[in-house]
Image: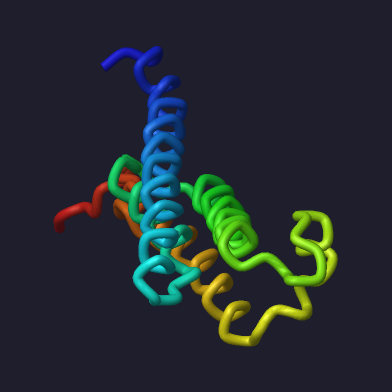
Length: 139
């Protein structure tokens, strides 16, 4: 293997992880809408599926990518919540974001769970590479 392939490996891993996360997020967003139409409430679903999608395509562990997916998952959960359950007084996104503290505790717990899942599934996707530069010596 030459050095040029090693230098692109992190970029390929990042691209695959983010593509998987984007696809999982879109599926999660529409799955949440479908569940709402069926009478269920699961605001963590968009974030969980974003993390699962990213984790399925990730090739190496990366705290940075996991943090990006976590922030994206939390944002997507809040966006999905706003689109399906806006405040009655004002249905604008700016009003929703300025009144996040007014959301029900269950909603906040589920959004946090979605954000955590976005991190966890990406971070736990593959074991961290083990350095074998100094193998144990045999007596």
